[in-house]
Image 1 (cartoon, rainbow, N blue to C red):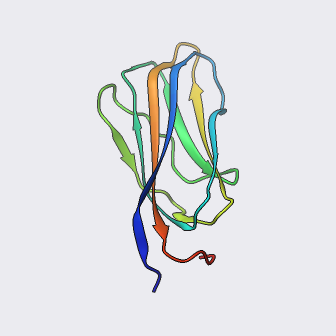
Image 2 (cartoon, rainbow, N blue to C red; image 1 turned 180 degrees about the horizontal axis):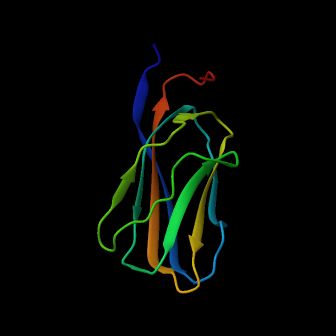
Length: 119
């Protein structure tokens, strides 16, 4: 059984997300480790109308649309938690014609595998 070490926290922050965005990438990260994505947390100081974010791994969504409540972290479990070295993790946002985020922060929390073998 694989042994997992302390967590790697990948932060993505966008100070402002304007209206009328459709699946716009705001952050990309290439994993330097093999591990498990433990959870994904989203937080914002303000949200207006319809606004959401999603995390993708190698182009495929691993969360449903996340719509945090202003001032309260939302926590999601990934649908595909396995992470290999070199995998691309991206954060995308979508807003309607009057939707917006202020100070959107998404944290991807990874438990690193002790050995560097693929899962």
